[in-house]
Length: 294
Image (cartoon, rainbow, N blue to C red; front, top):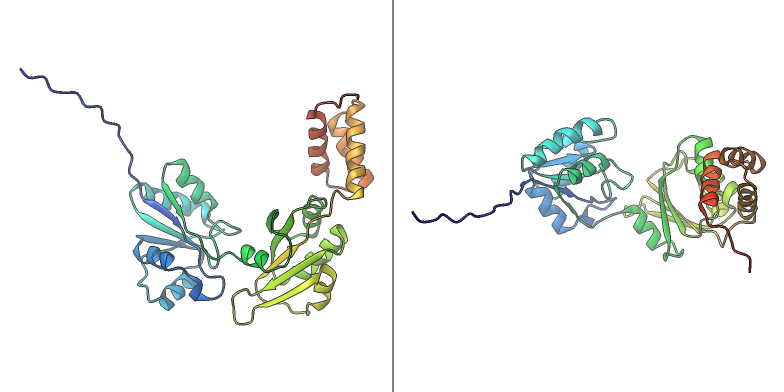
């Protein structure tokens, strides 16, 4: 009897594909031909607002595949259902109302679930308000820190800004029009009157730019601000004197053997800084190797 060769076969799980598709932030013509092709060919589109996506597809003369809502309030439930479809082989496009999905928009849970289950993820390049604002701001672009949306409440918002006081990279953030005046006032109070640029309604017919300092931008804003806001702020010239003093006190207390929790409470009270930020500095100081004498 002839021997039958034994062939080793490695099983491969075949899944669908999750496409991250950026949509125009204002001008429909900014949607790329590739993005249009993907939206026209997928089995399903997960959209932050199905009405917005349906209007966009209508402008592009694309017959929409089935649309399913995917937003902040149903993200957990929808992620499970969409993952099941991806594992069944569906090709699904994820879009937000405007800009790049997952960047300050819903999508992170679905993306993580897809990656953890071996689903192919394809991210398309395209519109992003932060990049557009940065590129035309007139501020340095070598080092950039994107902050997304700051906390809505005044206390946590100020604490978030405090943590970036000594950051030398250019800062980019988004803000809602009804909060932008309060946010700029807090930025001036904590960071000082730095150079900045505010972009409103990017790529739309009424796009508007205000460049100068934070104070001049605040003075130029009317009482009723509308549109989507992107704000670009110059980084610190170097560690602020107050920050240097904070670090000196933290290091001195840690080197003296003071418990990290006590360091946090004392320094936060003396310099009116967020306790969490001081705690992280104290942990870093404790972990740093001691300086050797020359």
